[in-house]
Image (tube, rainbow, N blue to C red; front, side, top):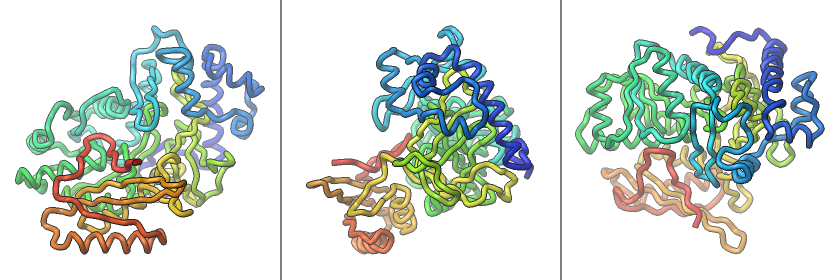
Length: 431
């Protein structure tokens, strides 16, 4: 397979490319964008930066709360706009799963930049103009739906929207149209297979060969990925991640399942210690920080995404991409991690254990804090044909004890009791 991204023979060539793009971005942004011109003045940062090192040393982080406060102070879109409002043609909004939603505007040029990034995601999945792509979600204000759809259209794919349809109707459309690529959340691809079993629809008859998942960490969790591929015979699962405020960021690696490559031709990516703000070494775990290099109309400079990732020791990959490799994809979010009796527990680690059991149809994690002590309780819904629900609960309690050194109570609930999700699953609930 050819190189996924533009070929940079060495690190210095990549950094020269990034610096050139950064200088063009700052030349457009700083004279006109009041949000970032104010940040640069307050930090005493000159408009002409000599190197990437100077950029990383002197430019302050951008925080999500800053952007939210800015939009509250300058409604409805805030002051992080480089051009007059009439230049913008696209409106999107974050999901607001944590805190207040943010509105995001894009110019046609910034939109095209994001479609180019999505094209890299498709090329990494070996999607071509011969493919038919089914989008199994209702199109709302979230950016990922629209950019994924339009990028595939621009590539020449037949694009099939699945909005406004019940799950059974979506399944019939996937089979009737002969769709070869499915785009969905990991949870919903599992839900579609569950409905297929209820409706006596044989997914072995489907022509889906690639399932591109996003919105949750599941696509990079080995047990979840294997489970989806078992439910969809002949399909290969590839992960992807992005954010409304950043755009499409990474693509799943075919040679190393469970690895996401950041598109470094389009982003300056850092992995920092969330407490100190300092860079973590290769192999270390920290928070992903992104600077987009082509979204000039609504830029982000050193944006703390809140995504927890682990840097690979070496970014050179057998797939041909030299981009920053994230082991295990997105491990969780800084605001999702739960500390239980001194142990860091990430949602992705819990899901891996639950999916490895091969007996859990759905689950819910309840978080309680009593007198500053945080405790977890997990409800699991066994598959209807599981022979020993009580035994499954005990098996999982043992697995959690072995993995975390913690006693985490597990209880079972009747079939169909727990909610199903089309969008991002909300399985972790604070009580």
